[in-house]
Image (cartoon, helix red, strand yellow):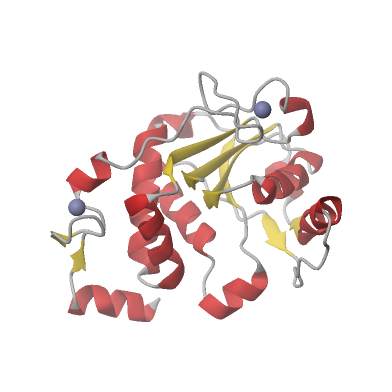
Length: 226
Ligand SMILES: [Zn+2]
Ligand SMILES: [Zn+2]
């Protein structure tokens, strides 16, 4: 992170899309980011929004998974920056775009029960990188939107996916998260933040823990959807 700030002083950013000097993603490239499909995250059935469809809803703890863009092009490169360098700048760009595209702004903070929670990254990866990228995005999004952020989910130390079958992996994922502040979770409408959603299993595992801990509703909020 110190290196990230130093780099920002020594070398200005170049746009990931067109190499223009200035921001990591310039205004033009930002506007041309791929718009995500309106589909259920679970069965990919097209719908009128990114809500979980009526068929999948009984088997999902997530009311919806909202994305700012698709996991492609400049959006994908920005995620790469978030994970492998310039993390702080990437996190704030990502939070800006999530807030813009999903309409998360100061009006939301009027709803007192809405909170932002991040889906913690596996501890082994946090150790290697020195930071948790989903936490960086969640915090930047809270600053940008005025919605309170509470780190109420923790991740257990070991998370090696040794299981071969799907059910076994799911059990391991479920046990990988645990809640730390029931008081904050109970009755809350949680915006569960992560950088990317691929199969949705990570968000589901974290959302299940929140629902069991008493959350009233959980929506997944990601930058990019595969
Ligand atoms: Zn550009
Ligand atoms: Zn569905």
